Structures are given as C-alpha cells and as structure tokens.
Length: 158
Image (cartoon, rainbow, N blue to C red; front, top):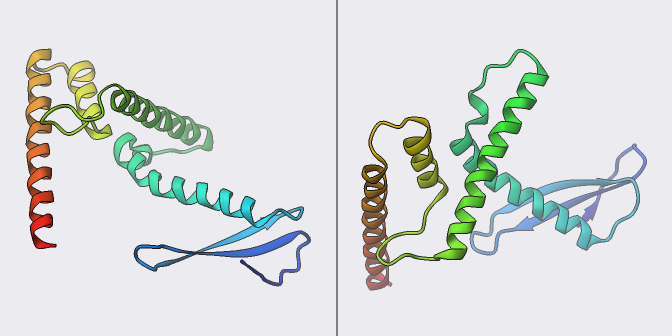
C-alpha cells in the first residue's frame, strides 16, 4: 500500500495486488473519509475483484446489456431483473451442488445448463419434459467424459 498526494480531504491509497499464479499486478485506488486499517481496504478491494470476475458470467447468462434504453429508470429496472435472473441461476446451482456434488458419470449442473433447461422446459416448451431432461443428461455425461479425458491427458504429460 502506498500513499499518494491528492488535494481533496480524506485518505487516499493505492493498493497493488499480485496474482500468486501469474505474477500479474492489479492496481486499486482507494479513498476513505476517515482512516481505515489496511485489512479493511484489502477486504473491500477483494470483494470488488470478486464481483468484477463474476460480472462477465452474469452478462453472458442474464444479458443485462441487451436492453435498449432511453431513460435511467428503464435501465435500472432491466439490470435489476437481469441481476435477479443471475441470482436465481446461482442459487439453484448452489442448492444442486449441496445436494449432489457430482452425480456419477456427469458433471455437476452449471448455471448455463440450468438456464438452458429453464428456457426449454418453461419458456419455450417445444419438446416434452422427458426429452429435454434426457438431452441435458446426455450432454452432461459427454462433458464429464471429455473432462476426465482431458485430466488424464494432462496427468500423462506432467
């Protein structure tokens, strides 16, 4: 952590974070009206980095950027609905992982797979439920086989 000059009142700091695996540096400019301990700055910055990593996932699943808005109220409503949709997918995934961490021969349900099933079973009901669930089961089994094969190949190369 380094202090740097700024004309505004309060406490200004620059946090530098180094990724342990890649060595990549990330910089975070901090401001607080009152003096706060370094541990608090690191905790808050860590939450922001976590959120920034999760945000692209949410953009891909809930599509908050696909709404054409003319007013802030409309944008706030759309983003709120997109965030709720992403929260729904994440909660369903966490609940499924708690009940069945890894089904035999399948990968665990992902947010993408839950989204596909939800759309196929509730929104666009084209085929019967058994067909859609069988299709999901086949795809997850295929992904599990691919994942196992990939891990075996990595183990033999190491």
